[in-house]
Length: 287
Image 1 (cartoon, one colour):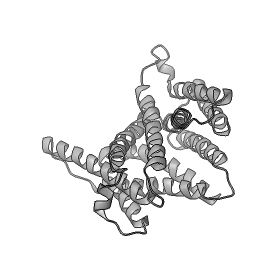
Image 2 (image 1 turned 45 degrees about the horizontal axis):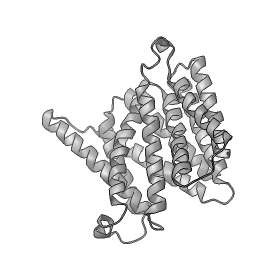
Image 3 (image 1 turned 180 degrees about the vertical axis):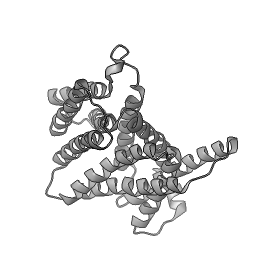
Image 4 (image 1 turned 90 degrees about the vertical axis):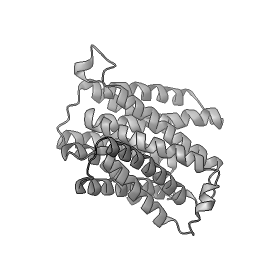
């Protein structure tokens, strides 16, 4: 249970750190690049076997890791923008509802069971993303401001689906740390390349606060995944129950912290979306 609580805490802290970047005027892209460098170091540190670069390059999952590296840097930026512009509740709902996408993929690719309960849950999840994201000022123009949570929803879902597919198809046993570290390394390389191109066009400095913020985000990011995997390996909780508690808790804690610390305004429509998101997670996970 302690691993589950730590995973919920770390995952929620990611949204809060993104929000603090805005408050402290920390360049999000710079911090995210530092974040992936830090996360890569942690992944290498956790790998208990010799690191052979030639074996990594010739592995079957290397191209998947490259693609995921690009998605990681892109979607993490979108997550930050969603938390900063739309609020913590919107970012948490959009990212956590994306669990629907790997479920649909599992039904299609692995012939997993599908019934009325799953279909209802999937529909409710899609509706909840809209309801939790729409702002009262944009009721007359319902699509305004929705592109960020929609991109976050599909991007996070594609990442989860890709990781699941690569893990089940190409990844050998005990290779998760080096696979994760490789993804983080690609994300760091891609992000660094973007910063270098920007620096050529318009020189800038890398402030100390961006390095500290990025390192803090990297440690939090790594341990959110690490503690979730540790919780999944524990025999006392079934995975369906664990994912239900984990996702619902992150949505609720992020929403409450947004209300308390950042004075975010949540309309009745947004609350209905958040409640619907919780119901959808429970229905789909327990189906």
